[in-house]
Image (tube, rainbow, N blue to C red; front, top):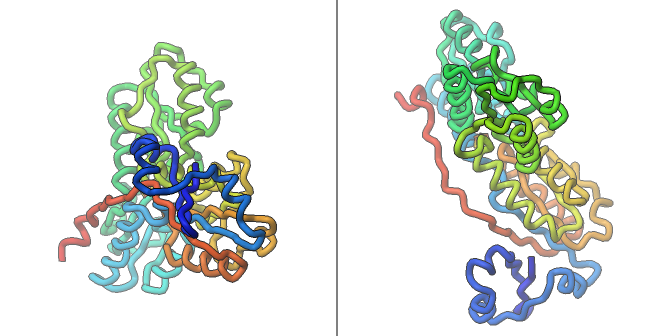
Length: 356
Ligand code: SF4
């Protein structure tokens, strides 16, 4: 990355952009002189601390839909509305919905017979749907469409006689849901080592899928290991990792290269928030996952010139704003949003809450 300096303004431009526009064109267009980023940073006074805000960050279309589903159900039918598992992995969101009258349960046995129950964005295995039907519950499915896509693929592969390798965290509710579509033929793997221990014959019909919120580089490594071991292994034409996970990782990856400190606003239970933080650490950065502004320690900023900040797909923007305000109090004197891409994705609400 380079910084373009013009007067007292500064704008980060990425090599990706310059290759699209043409470097000469870019300089002519902006009338700027170009300085390598490190040179520019060296010219900053010791008290100048800049915050680069990654965009896109925070809520994805699937999370927006899930939260709106609960709110719409509460409006339509009033409390209590039962939700199986946290609707999205974020304490602030869950607390707000609890205050509105939502009741979160892990076990359908805790939902009174005949009541309405909403499935979270992470999805559920078929066994849960069966239990709901036995208990005469009224189901409202807020499973993200991109999770459903992976469920459908698992079913299709199983029907065609494939063994399925599911790359994911075996205790994560999304992985449990996907594996539950074809439990007899699905093996969950979390690492290259686990792939090496798989014992299927090399000529077996086999396919792999992944959890939607994993690290792109982890999955790349594991997919390569699967291909080495099972050269004929199949997968979906497009990655099972969703657009929101991909965009947030790519966006942060670009700005974190220039940062001395990386902050990811997100819940400790949020898979994609954890992966963002791990990705920054893998780049050799000091990185912290924070759920509230108060968790930002003043000493983290010592000697820091540039901070990169993002938020996981289940983090409300209000939490990001609170963190920005705290950072300003702690000495940040410049905030700049750096756009990797614009997201214009919208998922329609489940039909059950559109009926009235
Ligand atoms: S993170 Fe991806 S899969 Fe999960 S809810 Fe958002 S868009 Fe859907």
